[in-house]
Length: 315
Image 1 (spheres, rainbow, N blue to C red):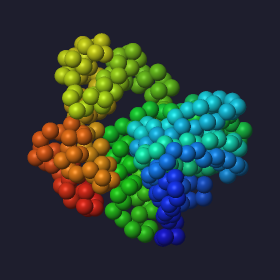
Image 2: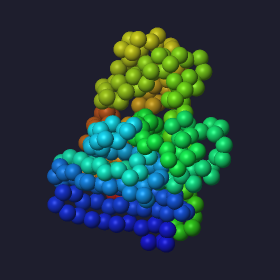
Image 3: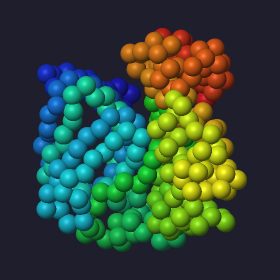
Image 4: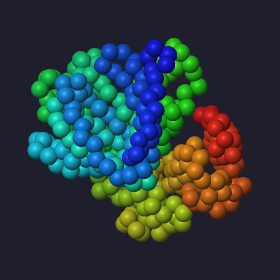
């Protein structure tokens, strides 16, 4: 405990894990949840007056189901799953959160008091429509919104949060800067979604939807990915439009994105320490162990074996 952060570890018959929290300033905090579920169970949660905050959640891994009946503007039952990120404002409600056997839940959660949110922008310029009512009134409607998939850029920032190289005051400054960067990426994605994904020059919303479909197919089939031609045919785009559009939407090539995704997944699996390096290489679709080790070291500055042994990656 450094005066602004701490770790709480726990274990009972349903699960075990740890919560880490970091307080940056009044009404602005970070929580990192790392939990292993032994038995399926549900937990009743009550959001009281203290939950009059905007919550941002990045689900790195795991799955949970939330039952939240009779709340206007909120689905009575919804899921939160690994690889996705969410925004919600849910003061003064009761809910049941269900977790499931043999799951590993890792989440990064950011809580921001409405006054802290307002301090960043006293006007409405650039503010996502979803958040404008929060900026204008203390009686804003509740909501829970799935914003989208965690991008490789977001994944990198999350890894920086999990592997901070600093201590004391420098760590506090570093972590707050990364939390703000993560929020900026999330809010930008939200604005683009609200604008019908028209922020990408030269691409129609339907084409961008198909590029996102191509990304999802890549991830699902990463052990045996389709060729560019096959992928383009599956989503109904010309292969040159797919290649050009993919770079516009995601900032990298089709297989550059897949490579980054594989390395991010490998990093998480190595840090979990449950699988061997060979098993992890196979899991992320790298059949040649030497290629996998070389790629991982080029990206993170350490070998997979060193990472699995607890050495921290460099970015």
